[in-house]
Image 1 (cartoon, rainbow, N blue to C red):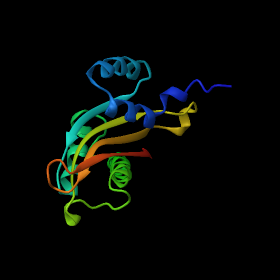
Image 2: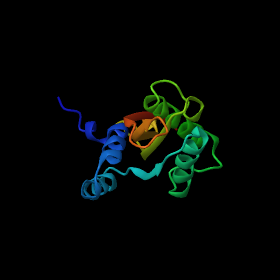
Image 3: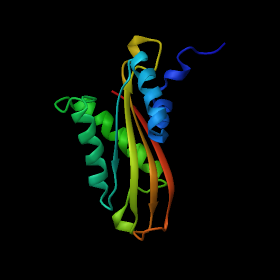
Amino acid sequence: MVDEKQDTRIGKRALQLVLANSEEIKVLEQQFEQEKLQYCTGKTGSMDLQKVVSAMETAAKRNGLIEEGLYREMHALYHAILEAVQGVTRGQVQLGEVMRTVGLRFAIVRGRPYRKEAEGEWIAVALYGTIGAPIKGLEHETAGLGINHI
């Protein structure tokens, strides 16, 4: 039997969004509205991990995905970001310290991926872009996904 909620998994949606072109984003926006998912996208790039994390936190706050004054929401987002960054950096949550730089697109999705309402809301962070030596042209593709309950 096919799970009717299968296509509303927030991790899958975050990955679709971060990989989508402008035409595909229009289609996804309609699906997100039907599925009652909140989302935002953006770009970040730095040799400073704090700046990368800060860009995503700022986007989530500005787009109303999280409430800054609620610790549990900030905490959930922070851990989803760190999990996604670990994917991008192959488990080493470092950038400038090891002479790497990144150019990333990100997507943050908030929603209720489970049938049971009691499971509550979850947040997913997807990253896609390039990482490599801080020399133009010596980067390679990378991706990461982090999911946490709120």
